[in-house]
Image (cartoon, rainbow, N blue to C red; front, side, top):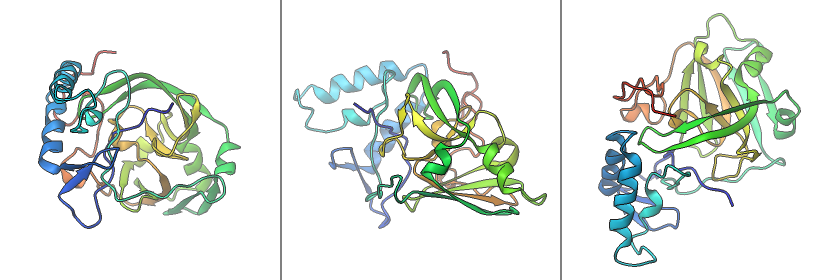
Length: 255
């Protein structure tokens, strides 16, 4: 059974002040932000906060009528909450990844095209900036550098912008970051095809950075002259999101 990914990646297009959990229950923005603030208090403290908050929220009922325990960090798995109205589902019949911008050879790839390319498997911890971590998680896909080389990046390009078919989320990397061997256009996670909830059928995976850089539901790769701040960077997150060295953290988390 798939576990689902909580990394927040969208906001209701109407600017609503409420978020919804995985079951569709409305959750106040202040409460969610407060919970995220607790996670951000420190990676090392996350498991303790997890257990304490779960105990408190679940005390009133075995069924947790608040619906909030599913939003909490969990050292053993992923958590998910949706702040988008909806995200369309894509599969091999209608998925397309476009590469454009400052390139000599713009291209469009189907899911079958991407699957036919050489695949790289990376096993690293997944680290969320809010504090939860999933150890030794395998991702597999095409190195982003392979697609950039095929497109013929122009000398005027200095960054890569990523767009997603949820219609809201964006991310960016410098060109040097995008060419790293541990940055993938991922098709598989935990040795299974990426599920919709995990950002499938294709997502970005930036292994050395906090998970908000690994944009789900990837649909576009555009070469630009400089970095364009992504969705969460425009709301205060660091543009360079190296694990342990950004967003107020000074030390690499213990593996």
